[in-house]
Length: 277
Image 1 (cartoon, rainbow, N blue to C red):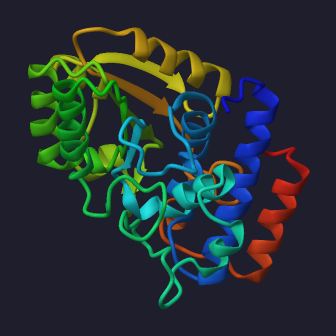
Image 2: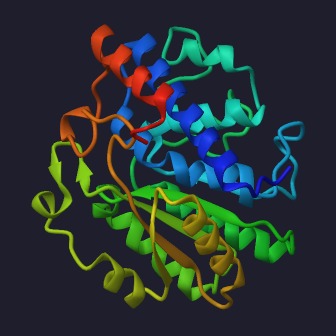
């Protein structure tokens, strides 16, 4: 069922953030910062935009989501659980030995995961292949691919982008989680990445820039992407790493650090109040 009420979607996003903190805290490992920054994007996709059915996770006609930044699996698992692909109780097994919910998502073990991802840069190539296959088969599927801004340092991203434009893949929508931080610093300090819009425009993409935490604006952006013909779309979503947790926001140290008990309790308190998100 497609949810159109903005407040309802914001409430789901808040629950997703709670789940992420719970997952990483229970595992005492994982990547909270980048997971929290893409929550609102995933919430809009799974609850408002995508043609999917949790009861038929392998339906051939479904839309696909590729989380190319696969280390942010806590966000994907959380959204899938909220959508009903599996019981929320399983989230407590995140990264535990023998659990299906490993640090990088496995499409052979987790219902709703459309690509086993983790090696940065590869997801967009797979998404291009899926979009091309959908065109060839006239399946009508839309393919969504979330990439990180640190990830687009990878050369494979640009090779895939050339193929997307060459084949006029207007059923492909790439979302850049533009939180401006990567593993150990700001993106412009690591590889000198700038003028992201201009770069992807020169590769033939329709560019939409949006506040990646504004649910209404995200819905409008995805609807515009659906109406775009003859070229792929790149949504540059301006986000905040660690969004929703005061002491995590814009702090590169939370890229791959789990909260201790005191930090966990403070984070959950903030999310319970919802006055910070």
